[in-house]
Image 1 (tube, rainbow, N blue to C red):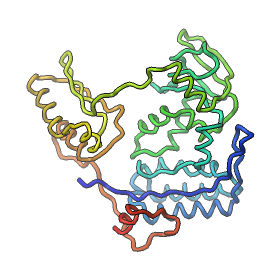
Image 2: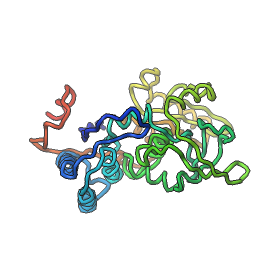
Image 3: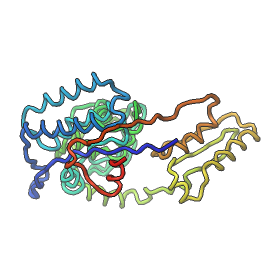
Image 4: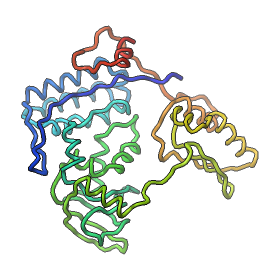
Length: 345
């Protein structure tokens, strides 16, 4: 099965420099006329050259969303506000290789001088927990439940963020994992950067605690993390691992990337063959496959594993093509060696 190559669409927006004296960004307003023109460029690029635009959402439904967004661009907005307007399209397109990127100056400010949510978190069974505490309040313990942030329930917040991130198909586990890895960054992107956060917490003993905490800049949280959590980095080992315990097989597949497997000197075909042969020889009836840290990779590797799990024929992926002689608005494309090769194809 051939690996599909996709041409990326990048929407370029102009952002004025962030004023150094203020911790909150001062952004230039972009006129409604310019916003509408930018949006038409984006829409035309997607409609004329995206090979899988209507795989998960019908053209009629997507057209209605396109029209709604364009209708909302009737007043001046900042670049980050414009970004927030268009990101719901990613869920509807359902293509993990299609993405929009926030204005680079805003991302730089998030990483330097903007106040951020002062915790690392994890998400389990529709509940947000504190994983690491970077705040000034050292009485807040890891494992505490965060019920709401600035009056908004964390369940509502999580779904709001999920609905604005790219993913493959209807999958939500990928965007949720991305959000958990950088919750304070996504909060800044989609909810802003308040100087304080009003939190409703539920402690391990079930009591409710309401606190107001200051936002923290990235460098301060990094320093606290190094000091308070010095053993944070954990060696994951080889991409492919297998063991049997109590008549249960445990197969860990951390990657489907051929280069990563090659670097680890693991031959995936031989590994899977040996794994399932051992399961058969030892008559192990139960198997757990752990792909929690797997970021994807090559369909051939996926298919090789899946061939041991299913007996009847199946279609893993379908290929999509756009046939056109002329790309619209070519001056807005970034041209390099590989881009030119893709476009010529």
